[in-house]
Image 1 (spheres, rainbow, N blue to C red):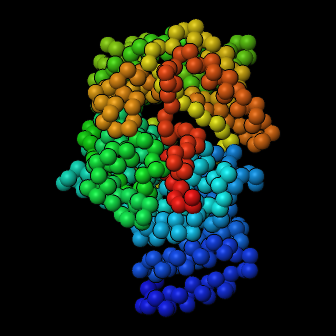
Image 2 (image 1 turned 180 degrees about the vertical axis):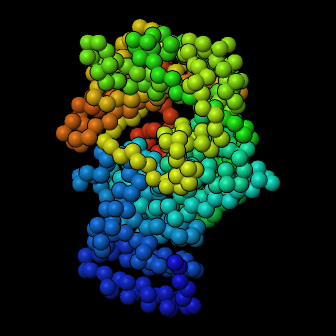
Image 3 (image 1 turned 120 degrees about the vertical axis):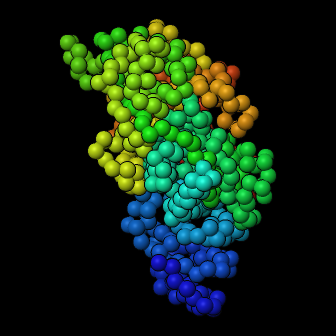
Length: 502
């Protein structure tokens, strides 16, 4: 709990005591940063509890650093670590952190607590020293049904946003990510695709306003930042424009009954031809229907004892099962969906189904926030504009069967995604895109086999070049590796930024 101190002298005494009590090896940079925060913050706060330093408490620092890290490849001892981690409690603290990082020439990483495929919200290659400003304490969500909108602060997860909306209404939703543990702060800057994008577009297409902090520490809303900046922060990946404090999002109508299903086909069940058909119809289906395909090798299920390929069609339909069956029988009968495969539920439960929660889990499970997926992995992405021919799929199966634990997820486009102009936001993958592919390979023995798995990914990615988008070959910005622009480095769904230091 924050405490109040009436005078700046009292605050200075508190800081002095903290620094004197610290071990001699405590970072001088941290001391200077704290002094600067005091000079630039009117409100006193529990400084000791807001900082995590390897010099002061290595165990707590390690726990905090790893708390939201998914990719264990970036937690090895050889990877650079921040000088310290700072957890602001209020927006004014973030303002002061930006001012102080710039003044002290500290590179600054911002993380909002969600996914980070390349570890760039807590790792800075060839950049020292750097600090991490963790926004996980800034997670307030205010839902206003009268205006069909909500303000969500950067530290909240997508799951928390969904939960707070359904607390107020069973017929309102928001078209953002499929994974509930995504950090909303960084999710929307990359576009934010999800299971309702064919009906309502991306999360970024449904942003009404934002609060950001610029490089001078000023808080700007849409009017103050201007339409050019507001355009840029909704899909360009963030990083160069300011620290996202909060998003104002537009709520969308959802029916009281939503239907979900999962139908799995192996190669022995004509899986290749069914997938070829899916490619031809997935973007043209009723826009209330989203069917993604999760593809991976399956265990020793064939008569010869060899692995096969499993293709699981996971669907969400904004309506009841009777209408869904009519749509499927007309447009995609090859899947063989039956009424028994269909499960009717509320929108919030359908969100949880897509996210992988058991059907028995209550909506409150969305408040847990943290991802349970922690592994060594490498991921890439592609966009597809023409159906991959059967011979191309058969070649892909051979590639997948050579890898230990590969996974690929194909997400359909079309519907509203084709009707929004590619210039409406910086997210350009619109009309003409059939589906997006996510590639993933995981392993558990760390550095021992990393090179082999990375080489497999490169080989598979090279093979697919002939079947995916060209000139240029495109990728989803939130899965990217590090980009550099004008001295700023930025990355993944845990929106991060580097300020000053040049």
